[in-house]
Image (tube, rainbow, N blue to C red; front, top):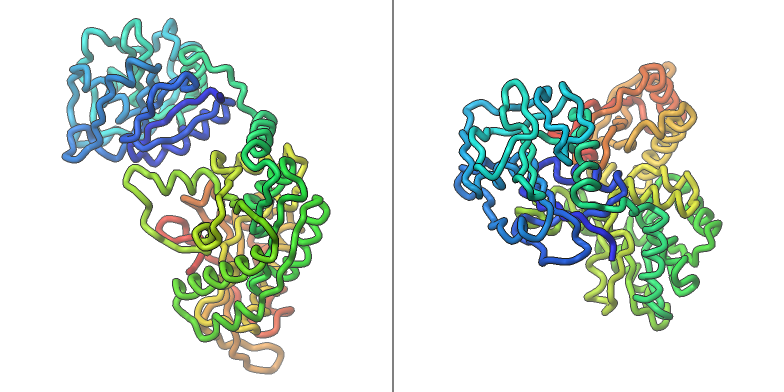
Length: 509
């Protein structure tokens, strides 16, 4: 069994970042809600307690009993997790009226402690807490302090129980990764053997055992997740994997044909289904964003279901579900509030009476790309920007017509190809064009025009949870704007979106 670190989530904004840092150190980890403490298992090498937006003194603050956890595993508490550990054993702390937030420097360091080996005196760390430990129990001792925080780090003497009042997982904690590695290697004795190659081997072997000679159907989108899932399954079961790629009429220009060619080059068994007219017919006169999403989603399910039933004896439905999707469904506060509802083939198993297989459900998006690279998949697929499930349907504000799709496809192609030609595509996490439901006055030649406005959007992000607008060069934006207005009939004005997420979302609908 894979060596595993468990991260108990108390609601911190940095919980997924802890997981990323642990995995970057080649140790597999899983995030569990704080109230789902795992039973003792030999493969669990240690437990990290995350931070939290709560104070330990808040009414309703998460306060699970950690006694068995501390008895069974090495434990590292971060901020709220550290305060909870210490409080359980009788520590004294005060609730500050001012949050200690931002950069600080470690003054005292206990270099003999296994958690702090190699950490420099004066090393910068990132503080973010409202409670401060003022007095530790007799069984504890400090291992680090700053000018303002006497107990910046502590351990339970002669036990593998540690706490940090700062966040080692964030970029601003300069030697935070070293501290986490000390915990994983010196304390938990992890072998650091979790690599893309080992993941591929384990996954393929597991899929062979799980699926045997059964047939599997998978809905491809042309994106990274479904494509990498397809390649893992292809390695395991070959031609028993049946892939379906549906053209909903809302893809990028020429994308249906291009992606089918790429898949054929990978040796995948893919059927392309042209359902453009069906989708556009069902969307006629729909203007509400949520209604459009539901029409696109239900039409996709109907088309996919019909095509899947043409394949005899299919027993499994494969999905490109990744770890953030899994985490969201079991978050500390229950399922997240719905911000948008893209189509999801998760609605299919009950209807189709199939079992579900999800080869990527333990991976983050960046890890999926690493796995795809190890599988020697084309860079064009692996570097492809995220694209919403409803496609251009949520980038055409208001009702959707074939003419509006044509306009946006042409604008989008000029924009995306321009980013690639100017070596900007890989510097942007996601880019796209939006057709606005307004018309603008303009002058073209000697004629007065009254035509469409398009907005260009480009953002930088790690996982899409937060995003900042990309500062594309003015010269590039000027050239693209000119190309769009001159080459796309029906557009006479281009604007650039400079809002970040939050408060704005990446998509406009």
